[in-house]
Image (spheres, rainbow, N blue to C red):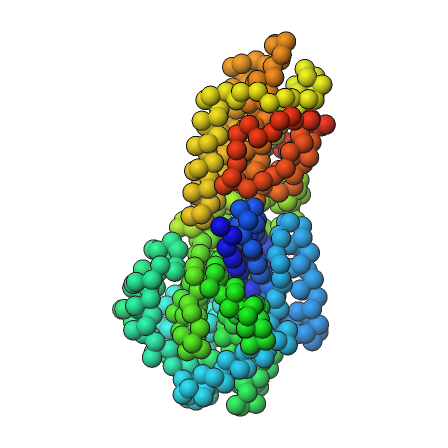
Length: 500
Ligand code: ME8
């Protein structure tokens, strides 16, 4: 049955180019988007940039350019990186787009009209990197001074008149949602937020900034001395990007099927704050919020602010192409646990799985088929054991992909490919006069494996399908023995081993 699958990434702050952490999220979203296209869903995949606020204002100031010029240039930089990583997004949203600004203004006005916004003074500790206030108990102290728990940088003291959103009014609603609705995945994250809300309650949040301090933002429609707080602005991208206000049919088509992918650093905003805003706007809550843990390096979350960034271009250089990088990131992908990035680990995954297992099998079978059978392999009965393994693997793979467990899905395919390599060693087709049965069995295994791996390594999978003459189809409708005749025109070397 065809369904609609709307998937989003966070919109990133373009104060610097994206790094491995952004790639982690974006590749994951891309893999889900590609999988859903393969199984016949109508997919809308959106990523983009979060272009307003103090962080961007300062980044532009530092460069001596107007923030608009700065974010324009950076939008191209982000798009270039996503192209390098073969990200198949359908739409790239920017919060400086005019339809988006209109949605933000209308939304904040609606909350104001409903009596959910009021003016009062605020004093507190602020992290510009998070664009977030931290209260005592939330921040950490280093040398007696408040520091951001994520970026480990000193917080700034802010005191100002601001507009508040009455988040406190939504406390019961939020508790009910986190307890009883199956939105946040994995569920442990819902329980984490629930625990915090139950313990501390919900305090109202500031949703505006005085222009004299933060002028780079969307003007508050009911007070021109203020700009809209960047997080309120940013979250609304998920609805403005599919035509909220402008094209309600389109909005109503995609919204009920939205899947937000985020890192756990922005969990609070995407549960408590986002769910309350949606409720206040009379919009249904998202279908799923998919949360993942961090990539870390020397114990710290990898990030621009921590200065331990790993550049996407370095990864692409080392692993030769986008496929290598995509595969490694998805192979280590973990929603619950932080993953320590290490070159040894990445190299060994690349060498043993992509080069030695998949690459080696494809090369061997391609060469053998050409040499022994002139490249033409007719349909034969598929080896019983292999055929059972193919079916089992497909079932598990589909189950894991439906559960967003890309890493496990990859691992079952690798197990199948290892079995196929063992079958080659056991049956020794190079010694046979007519190795038709063995080669056909192996080609069917390769076809199934590349079909399953296509969302992760689209270039390599397409290369094999072209060289061996078959189409990448729907992995939930794969039929063994469907191909009457393989025509092998090439025996590609997919991944060249790197020296460790
Ligand atoms: O927070 N490990 O933007 P941002 C895993 N503009 N994921 C990581 C990561 C790491 N070390 N570093 C970054 C913002 N990420 C806001 C979002 S959405 C309405 C507004 C990924 O540029 C992860 O997805 O700081 C994280 O949530 C996101 O980048 C933060 O990107």
